Amino acid sequence: MDRKTSYPQLPEEKLRGVVRTSFDSPEPTEAQLGRKRRNIGIVKAMGLGWIEHLPVVEDESTVQARTKEDVASRCLATVLCAIKGESNDGALVEELVEKYSANEFFSPMERAFLRDPEASRQDLTDFAWRYECVHVFLWALGYLPELNPPGQIADVSKEVGIISDKGPENFTRDATLRSRAEILDQADLYYRLHWAAIDLRLHGRRNDLANEEIIMERHRALNWLIRYMDQEWDDVTTDT
Image (cartoon, rainbow, N blue to C red; front, side):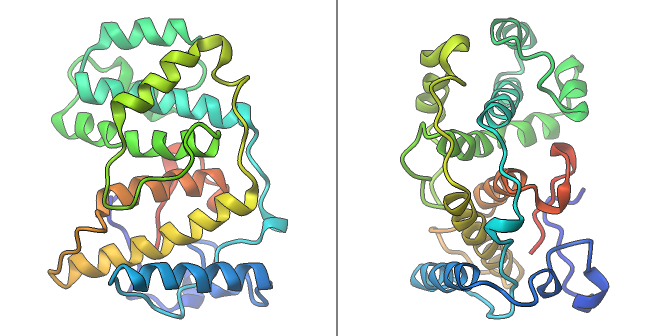
């Protein structure tokens, strides 16, 4: 999958069932419209581009919430792969997998990556960027009060420390999953931020408040949280 996929050349009706379109919410609720208005305001205040016709994200009534157990397991799988991506220390990761009883948490692509003793530099880099997904999951689990600004990377040492300090016995138990409304607020915001970041790149512009890599990984995690297009973790897209 191209890490910067978009579909600017296709008419919206051709994309139904492939990406989010206005046909998915033909009569948006006030909550959906209010979320869109607020987030366009945030994007505009950052000096970023926006388009009015970018669709609303899904409504609370149509989103099946993830359980905190699901989110905690996904967080652990993601952070262990990110640790390998950063360190390329297979022995360390194996030790942590055993400590957190995480062997069943990994997706097929993650499992192949962890088992590969000669992972490519690109794979190591791509998985290390998943610390930004971990950042979202820790927020969703109530362990972070807010997401960092979209131009500020996750504090990896602090956030890995949260998981380590909780330990395998308490990490899931002590979590408090955020409401669907809170998660949808951020899913909508990062949907619009991602469009704006791609627009900057395509026009050769820069805005230090918006890092496309950070935004894309957080968008990925948020889409998984809201079950975007019912995609499994390896297949989650970040369409704009």
